[in-house]
Length: 99
Image (cartoon, rainbow, N blue to C red; front, top):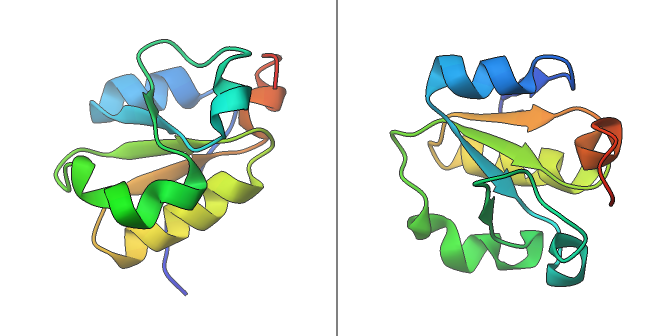
């Protein structure tokens, strides 16, 4: 099993800052319309295979979705392909954002 970090809702901002990471929102466009984490990159989970080259392997990535399930799958896939990734536990719902 490919390993990746899990980051909780209380720690995500410090994890992103400490790792100079990007936030990757893997929800669907209709979900992004409800709001995203500021400055996040938006690539839906269904497009990640086709668009993973848009992401730099040297930059850590925090994967985010509604509750953490889809982003966990994306994090696992990206880690398998050589990216340094983490998953936001509980997703944007855990942050109290519209989801």
